[in-house]
Length: 117
Image (cartoon, rainbow, N blue to C red; front, top):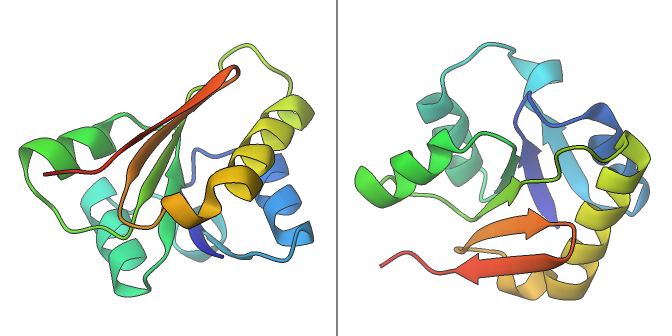
């Protein structure tokens, strides 16, 4: 799959997704400190699912109606980096076909998938 990871996403998640054969661009490597709106624009332009830990993307999608190709919001506070990467990779492996165009929230014990109206 094609992903764009926001700069707040841990490098371990980026590395595990790349090792699994996914195409992963990482804002921290490309253009650190760009605005959330620009991150979302770039993800949509490249038809990449955005992976982020920043809840502000919900505001951009739901309140401002910004276009996107899918968002995965990582909510895994308190877990070590290896466990976070394993949870995100498992969610993508199991539900990858459902991610494009959806707003997803990954938690340790569940994945919520919503389609914006």
